Image 1 (cartoon, rainbow, N blue to C red):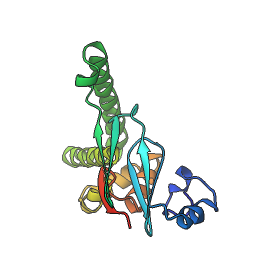
Image 2 (tube, one colour; image 1 turned 45 degrees about the vertical axis):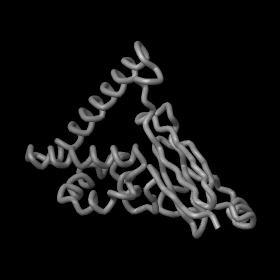
Image 3 (cartoon, one colour; image 1 turned 180 degrees about the vertical axis):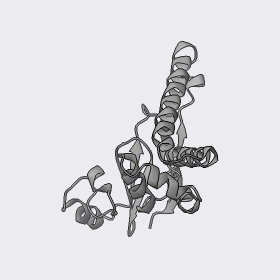
Length: 189
């Protein structure tokens, strides 16, 4: 949505200069948009924009919206495949997630080990990267952003990924206006 934030999110937004004034005119307080591979919540004045994750992308989030009186609440949970898709499909999903995690770990270990020679520093940097992806995927990046930036391994992470697509993207995510999208509540007035 044009006007709902800065710092790199324009690629994910509808570029329509008439949309925001229209939503404001009719006092829209919450807009659901997509598609994103994670939950993202942005705010512009009284308007919240939830860029909803697709449930087919790990961690396979599904959102719940509750409206009680003037209070609006939202939270996202990972789909419980063991309950809803027991048997073969559940095991395939778990296997797919484990393979994807292993491949991602191997990729970043390979990239970062070219810049970080100390094994302890490399391990700490990979753990920090995992915290970033976990928070980003679950929609909780807004609540841990400062901790990640202040981590002693953050400069090593940024230096190690500087000339990849990941470095600039992570840098943008860390300075953007993302709020905690895993769960939020606001009063509709």
